[in-house]
Every structure is written in structure tokens, then in C-alpha cells.
Image 1: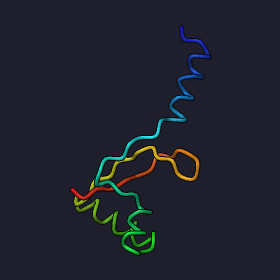
Image 2: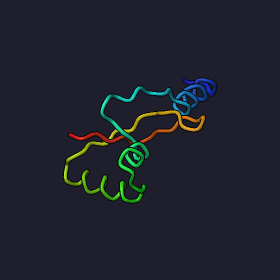
Image 3: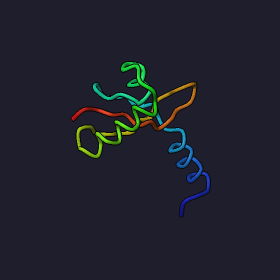
Length: 78
């Protein structure tokens, strides 16, 4: 039978997570906005269309932003 400390350690490890290396070619929405000089809403609309058309893939990676670690969507052209 598992103890409460084992559960606490397991949950804490999932919560915090480790920062992941993002493979080459993947970009966040913010990176695309900056590079293409387009507003966030425009980029999101186009990302949604491109995903539906199967032109891009989406994967989530744990990255550090503003001192915290977030699970963040990244996009790559297929």
C-alpha cells in the first residue's frame, strides 16, 4: 500500500515538471507574432486554420517564462 508521502512526492514531481528542450523548427505563438510582426489574435486564427488543414503540427513543451515553468504549445510546419 502506498503512503501519503509517496503520493505527495509523485504529485509534486508532475506539478513542477522539468524544463524540456524544444526541438528545432518548433515555435510558440509569441515567437511567431514577433517574427511575423502580426497580432496574437491573427496568429491564433491562422494557426487554427493551418491545423485543420493538416499543414502544421502542435506539441506542448515545458518551458520557463517569467520565472515559472509552463506547458506551452509549440507549432511546426509539416
